Length: 390
Image (cartoon, rainbow, N blue to C red):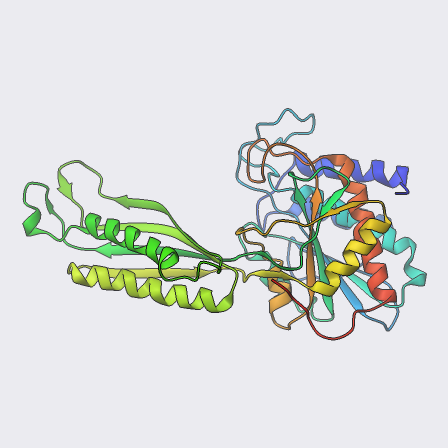
């Protein structure tokens, strides 16, 4: 792959600067300022964006298709434990999911596209999005209306279990829909020596927890990927008092919308039924997150061809029950095809681990891939509607 050494060195500097100064969701002021500064210095036109930490730019003037490229910018509340010379200088905060990589990759892709701007038969609109980790940033960007012209969307994500020079591409479902729940069971407190005078919420919560496991093992099709995890149980504060209330929290992950709706309905029925059987009140808080993410088949075919043409190795990326709010761009307010590409960045630690790293040598090839894929899609647009596969 042809390497622009000057731009690659400049990009490495942005990547290290963003990594040193990570910012949490909706607090990416310094990161956004750097993105604006670099894009402006390279003559790339910025579009007015109502989000304080969002950046949008556009390249091209043609009347052809509009391609959307997206990168997320926020970090995680994790204390970094790497020995990188550019490790985080912010206590309790680090880029443990590669968003510094994504941002720097898209910045260089913007510059590469700008260098070819006069040859583009359409436009490329690039979105530097805040707050992916709190699953709200994509919806914020969509509400600005700036995503409306995009006919399809492209995004990338670091993947430590593929080596640099390798990309993961998979058609159909690649990431799960994410729902979060909290169940509060209220009974009647009592002395531990007189349980008959109270209504103990603890065995009710335990019974609910066990019953919820059957929603997957006995109520879901074994060939349908459904995951339900209770991750937090809390009740009481001392050894000799039956508490009045307790709560549990967890998450539901699904790939099929019908399974998502059916499992949620069964969840409510189980929690309320068990609570009522024990004479306790039950309050359920359900927080729906991003929908499942589906890669368009035709986009996958095009991306594979472009990647291989650049000398990159292509592997079939694994499906994940993790969530990604890039799916919001494909789901609403208009249905549009999209692709989410895994970029091999090496390393033994998974994302969200305090020792997660992303190999800088994978940066510039990722930028070239995104720029060349966008140019290919402008010069030879897809035909027909969205085309997904499982």
